[in-house]
Image (tube, rainbow, N blue to C red; front, side):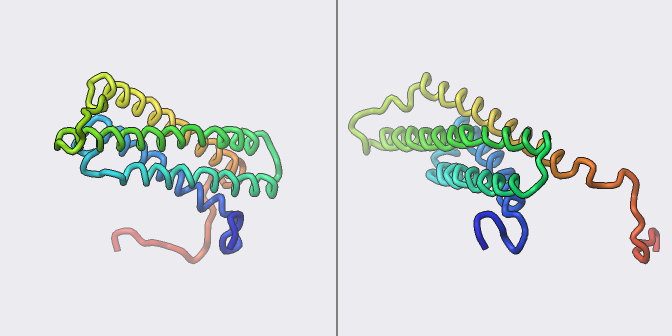
Length: 179
């Protein structure tokens, strides 16, 4: 097994599914934590860890995708998918940075409220909270939309003219209805 081939199949196909799941999951967790500080306090460092795993998954999928791109016939759909795929890393980095900042400010606010921090941090200010909510929403929506666009272009590149528009009989297989 390598970072390009798993069990004789292109690793990109496996890694991309992690990214497809983790980016929207991380984005949702980030927005929920930004909007509801109690959830952020309860989840603690879980969301930044999730965002870090998501961030690490993007270069893995991209590297495996570059290998796959070199091993399939080149066409405009493959090139478009590769171009779009290269744009996901900044979004994943944004999710990680914002989730870490949100975790840090929530943690500092909780410490100040408990009296553990003699200097009341500005993290509990409504302005900072508002900025974190707006940035979290913007980056989360951007990341999810980008994942959708990349996935759509990848599906078109992989399946364009590679299936029959009518059902193909497989002989012998039947599933009787109403038994």
